[in-house]
Image (cartoon, rainbow, N blue to C red; front, side, top):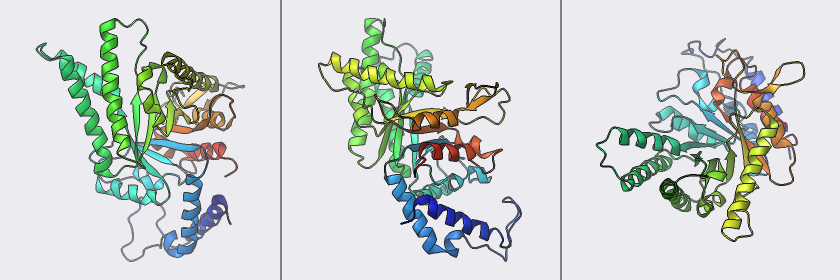
Length: 361
């Protein structure tokens, strides 16, 4: 049976032959009212179906996954770069940066990319809830209580979770940075514990009632109370907070910090099992920003010769490398839309990262 990449080569050949047909010179040119170029699916539906089957089998099998975040428009996509369907087919999860008030076009494209085994998710950012509550308290008359805080934070959490059903998302990424509990006064520690429980109890109840949906934790495991770490066992992936990392070594340090946090929590609860699953770590980087001339974003420390390394490239190599104490399962590339511009082919860095992580597929 042909592999996904064998079929992909045939499929690319079909694309190239189609380009010889009469068509617009540029994607943005006005479309002819009398001539429509047949899609590749229409030209050879059997080959396209075989390609989709191999693609979905690849994603359902054991491989290193690719998450990307995407700055989806809230209105109808105007530019080609705003379409989900232009993203590389080998991407596993697309995280929409604007998860609410989705336009019909984006919802339709979510359905289209699902046929390729690409699932659409969104992020619930707990820190944004806390920030908004702090602003409310600052502008209040001083009568608000901690019970009010728990109610507000809980309602915000429930509202974000409801988006999954409203738009038929395939899952959720929970962004919880947290803070160090060392030296926190007793009252603040109790409030921190109660708010954390309030948040993760709701997340846990949601995933229990949404079997088949993907759940990922994006945060610092060491800032979770041991009694709340059970949520991590319900997560398909644990995404490390490595967006600002500048080298491969820091990715490993963050992974080991999560491993150690699980061991410490287990000891505190009298358990022999690490409370942080060590078989599902995902690194996080971003693509270079078009306006960043200093290469401050999307790059790692200088290599020999003075040039900087692309963070996507370095992190993909890290994912593909073996480790004895934990498993590296993939990469989360923030702001994938930036990788569209200035590359030939488009999304070149993301495509190369996927190939580096999965060289034998």
